[in-house]
Image (cartoon, rainbow, N blue to C red; front, side):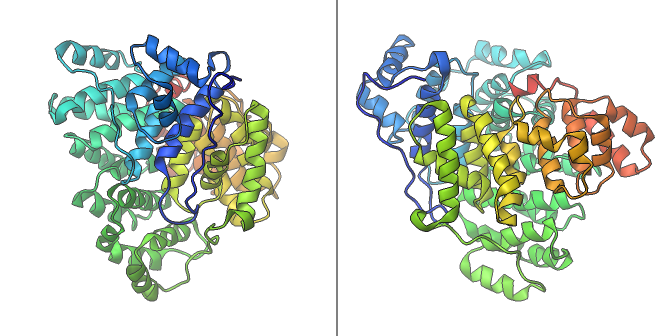
Length: 516
């Protein structure tokens, strides 16, 4: 790994805000992401001074002082983030997409001093559109096209043509992973926040109307990128859907709407659906836990009013972390983060501890997702972080943390499966009735983006269990497995047959290509 021998000692980066409440420091997270990418880039790793010289060669002159400000989060410059990707030989959008998603999620984020927007003329638009016509566009190419499409806030394409492209990008998003996921999500988010906002919402509605939809959270989050009355109303309707994963999508959409708009007061518009949905939810279920999460997001007065109307208690919650020195969860994450940095040969990173805590333990989905994206945008960190989060999912003494770590483990999907997780899919382990089914769900979801082989007997056993069925279908669907055709034709359950057809309709792009 590269050192910073020729420059000033690196300032330790941290977010001093309390992990369980208040605002986060967005700027310092951006700076940390750039620094860590630079330090852990293997053969491409350079010192900070070396990076300044490389940026100058790319026609982006920077002083050492400016570089320091960028890497400490004092200045947000999108053009510099793009240039870091070039110097470190990362796929376009590896760093930029997570950074821009993070900044849109939190309404108080620093302004981009130079987004590096390319001039859009006919030649540029044709160049951006061409890869999409081949059916083999990378996520970076989808993102370049989306930026060109919304440049200047103009409408450059007929609605019918845009609907076809949005639908195709959305279907790829549902199967994509890693940088390929980040860039496709950001492409669609730009369209959602631009002149084609209604097209993205219409595509989301069409998806939900399919009776056998299997993947929804990503699309629900997309709708939540822009607050509009129809988006709030749509999310409220999802809360009462009889399909549990659709109802949880409504919660995801509403939390993102609250965060991107900076206005928790918008939840007043869904108060009645929340109360009705909570009354219909069975205590102890995931639906009950998701609705509890939504109630806890409400402003204090609304929270008290709604809670008085509920017919059952809220789901248990971890106490918010406010003091690192006495917080057990912080100390545990600190030990695990140190293990990761030691394996990479870099100094301890307090901000890595914070991001790991938000990802695996924290109560806020918006923070967990954006922290996961920043971490997944660091190629060297993905595998060791997935290993420690899996360890928390299996060994943490608190059941709530184990469940949360397992559910969010998929945020660290890569092309390699940690040995511990592979063990959860071994034929003898999968047959053990005492094994927590949530481990198998997490393992199937994480394995879907890899080349790891899972025995057909393990998949079919998971298919027959209610708690693991959707994960088995997701694995087969994400991989484009021939089992979709077999189960779709032969399985006795019409719900399984319908789910297989849905996955087949989503598309057949190779899963390896969807990681780019």
